[in-house]
Image (tube, rainbow, N blue to C red; front, side, top):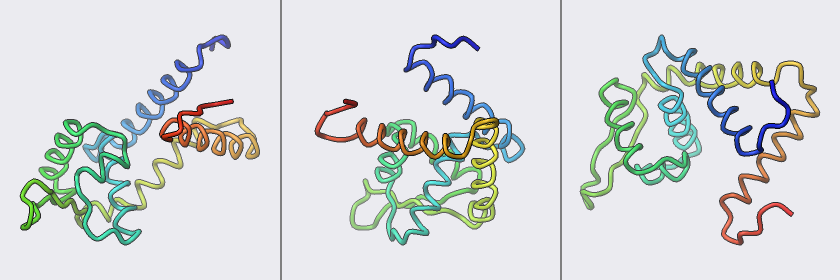
Length: 152
């Protein structure tokens, strides 16, 4: 592959490759990589003890738009992976919960993500992968921080 790829395009290409591999892995479950990511996020939030998880909470955690998340929730609910119900005190507020079907996928979710990461990182030393994770964590902090400092 070409070495002189613009920096932004590198992330875009990696993202597409990750999504494509996850989609292949998940095709038999009739899930896309994005749907899988939303379910994984929901399960992690529930396991962390968050009592009421709203559509907005999921949008913020996954960085997906309101319209995209609304469509995903409808599709995942039809497939039996989650439940959404309106809060009685505020009908605009939807509470989202994972179903047993989703929890049964929990280990498969983690395993598929790990396998995809191993595939992407084949031939790369553990120290390099650890450095990549630290670097991208910092980049994400910069990208979503309010101070606007960016990379120095």
